[in-house]
Every structure is written in structure tokens, then in C-alpha cells.
Length: 188
Image 1 (cartoon, helix red, strand yellow):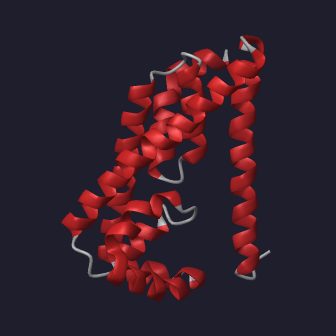
Image 2 (spheres, helix red, strand yellow):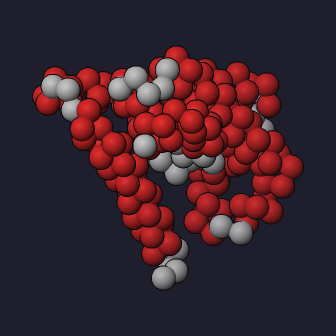
């Protein structure tokens, strides 16, 4: 049953997950590719497109309404000057690596949109970063599947449980980080 669901909606989940913080979905998709449920090059391609589109839209949102949007998030407003300072000195490295830093996938491009970084420079560097990120994260899920196969042999009977466990673990980590961030902002 889960195999049919993944085959039917896996690429859509990869695309939607990649628009935002898509590591958990991409790890699970890499694992599913190892198990033959998805096609690895297509997972990487869809993740690249989703991640690039999400970042480009966030950057343009930052250009359009970034300052007003950032002012609604006090912790982000506090960090924005630091991000701008890093961008002035190391914009290429920061743009290439920001997708690997949890919590900056959406906020980072919005803040960068409020900076003086030219859109074309951001777009090219962001695409290079996405071209590195998509196969690395998908590959980690794929190699996780390889490691489990080496340890357990054919684990077809627990394949669904492993996929559900990966997604559940990612969801729990996401909830924990979200709660932790809210506590730091002084919210319950």
C-alpha cells in the first residue's frame, strides 16, 4: 500500500518538500529510490527544480516586501543585519551554502532579497547550490538504504516501516525545532 502511494505521489511530495525545508522528504525519497519505488535521477531533478523555485520566489518576495515581512519576526529582524554583513563579505559562499543551514532555506533568501545582491548573481549561485544539495541529500537517503541492505539483507517486509519511521523522525525534529524557536522568542 505505501509502495503504491509513494509511486503515485512521491515526486509531488519531493517537489513540495523541496520548496521549503525538504531534507526529510528528500532523504526518504532517496531511500525509496534505493528500494526501486522512485527513480533517483528524477528525484534529484524534481528536488532541484523545487528548491530553486522556492528560493527564487522567496528572494523576489524579499525584494518586494522583505523589510515589512522581516519586521513581523523579531528574531529574524535581529539577525538580518548580521546576514547582510556576511553577504557583503562572502555573498557567493553564503548563497551556495545557505540551503545546508537549517532554518535559512526560506528566511535566508527573503533576507537576501532585502540586500544589495543582484538578482542574477543570486539566481546563478542558488542554482549551483541546489545542484549540489539535491544529489547530496538524496544520495544520503539512497546510501542509508544501501547500508540497511548490507546489514539486514532483503528487508522488503519492513520497508514501509522504515519509510514511515524516517518521515516521523523528520516530523518530530521539525516540531522540536519549531517549539524550541518559539520558546526562544518567548512564546509558549
